[in-house]
Length: 131
Image (cartoon, rainbow, N blue to C red; front, top):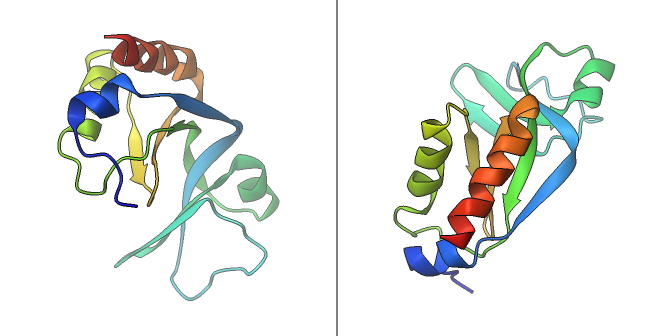
């Protein structure tokens, strides 16, 4: 299943799901990954391993973190080769001054937006879908 690549189809069929958890971004030195952590995402960089993890779990493990955010899942199966989908969405959020950290999964895109701006982001995404 390759996913949808037509921009108008992606935008018009956009539905969202919002996580209940607050997520944060943390980093640890590669190779020191505690097996008890359950990150939502890991990405290896030259400087260390980036983790997107629930805030409560980061606190429990004593990890320094930044960017308390909520995860918004875009429930449309977008192709990994779709052109303009994330650009369109991030531009609309940028116009409202809302920072977004997108993550592409195999089936869906996920947006991490500041926890205190969730309602605004949700309204913008609803407007995109209805346009």
